[in-house]
Image (cartoon, rainbow, N blue to C red):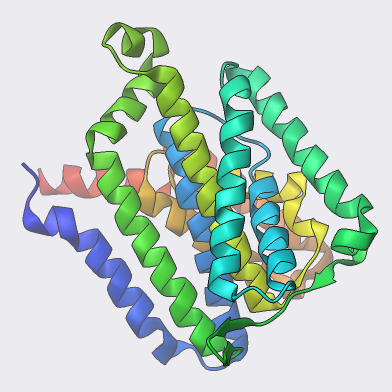
Length: 312
C-alpha cells in the first residue's frame, strides 16, 4: 500500500508550485512563459497516457491542438460564449479523434506512426490553404475570452485559469492510471495478445485513450488561442508534434509528472539560450542527447529510482 505522502505528495507539490510561482515572476514575460509551460504540459499529459501508458505512438498530435484552437476561435466569432465555444470545439475534436482512431489504431509500430503523421499533415495543409476560413499561413485573430460581460486579457488572470486546468488535468490523469483503466492500458503496452487473452477490450481501450489525449490537446489549443488572441498553422506542424513527443520522452514515459517536467524544460530552454542565436538549437540538441544517453528512462523515473535506492 502506498503511504499518504507517496499518494498525495506529488499533486500537493504541483499545487504549491502553481500557487507560489507568481511571487517569483518579475514581469509579464515570465508569466507568459509559465503559461506556455502549462499549455504544453496539458498536451503532454494526454500524449503520455497514449504513448507512455498504452504504447501507441502519435506523430500528429499537434493537429488536435490546432483543431481545438481554430475550432474554438471560429465558433466564438459567431457570438457564442467563450466557454461554450471551447466545449463545442472539444466535443468536435473528440468525435473526429474517435472516428479516425477506430481504423488507424488497428495499425502498430511505424505503421501507426506514419498514419498519425499523415493526419497531422492533412490538418496542417487545411489550415494553411483555407485562407478564407483560417487566414492561411498568416493566421487569424481570436476573440478575447469572455465570462459574462468580463473579458479576460491580463496575463495573471490567464495564469490562474491555465494553471488550474493543468492541476485538474494531472489529478485526473493520476486517478485514471491508478484505476482498472490504467492497469488495462499498461497491459496493452506490455502485450496486446496477452491483454486480449485476459479479456481486455484492447480496441476499445486504445480508441478511448486516443480520444482522451486528443481532447486534452484540443482543450490546451483552445485556451492557448484565446490567451494569445492569435493562431497560425505553425501550431499544428509536424515539428510541433515531434516537440510534444520529445517532451514526454525527456521527462519520462509512463510518468504523469515526467510529462510536466519535460514540457517545462523544453519550453524554457529556447528562452534560456536565446542569446546564442545561431547556436541555440545546437546547444538544446546536445543537452537532449546527453539526457537520453545518461538518463534513458527519462528524468523523473530515473530520479525517483535513485531516491528509492537511497532510502533502501
